Length: 466
Ligand SMILES: [Zn+2]
Image (cartoon, rainbow, N blue to C red; front, side):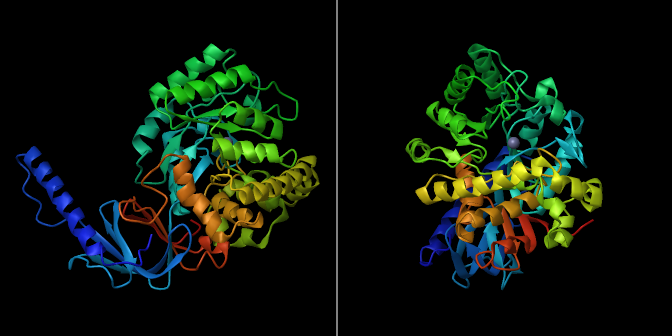
């Protein structure tokens, strides 16, 4: 946040420097052989960019980084900075907080294939680096995670090579139900499928003990084709999650399931309602209980939009996100023809229209929104690009660019309980995206990435195909 009143900032700076000196002293005392550090900790000054504070853009500003955090923000020229600070001129550019996806997946996809065999450290590291390249600095892998997740989360919850990794562990689905194991190449250790309430509690206890950020549930009969998680089982899972201080998020498709889950105490509806228009009872229940809603509009759009080949598919920003195998599919005239003619495409168009309509109603009513796309769950849900497309789709549902950006930063941080991410203000982690163009003029300007900073270090420049 840019403070118009800069008079208190030098004081704030001196207090923080004082606290840091104490910290350094502790470190030196703790290690008898280490000489006292000769140089103060690195201070980086980002000079001249306009800064998005969650509501509006500031005028030209100065952002001071110290270590991995933002130390101060103020109008350009208003802050005292150390003489030896590294100064970077970002005049004319715009800085937004790193984007935070509360609904993505890792380790499910390689090229045009999906399956358990892709849940590897190497593949996931590459995917997290891709997210960071696109300015998505934190992701929440919302289910389908086998036990390797627990190790990777410990290592990558504060990642330096890519986006921070949070997640839900495996999640809970119905036996033989959603998420469909066969269609997605899932194996038994990627989804818990308890048959009883007690088994559901046991599954949640196991996830909590091994380390998750959230508990994921799937409540969807897939148009009546599969058994659905029973209310008895999901009520037990939600209650057990809450006993462990964890939020519970549910995959849904239909309004009736969403309503029943809100009644059962769910914290996050992780997809848009796509079978019918939401009604006032649902809106009021969401508001009364403070339930979050993540629309994931791009999910259904991705089932047809690439076959239409819109002009942006030829831009480097898109092509850099697409694997060679997926690009080959998109380039195939036969694939495009068959996809556009398929019943799935027609259904997906209806789902997108309903999702947009419902998002408009929920947003106007003031329901809390989170940001996510389900990127990484299937090949066409393209990590990095999907998030920028989702921002654009949210504006098609009536959010202003500033409102969409706020959902994708500050609000998503709140959904995930991340108190020091999602905003540009003193004390926050310095996860920043520097843009060449103003995203409040046109939300598609979030694609004009100039640089990405992770924890106070510039990790990426412009997005370019390899
Ligand atoms: Zn998902």
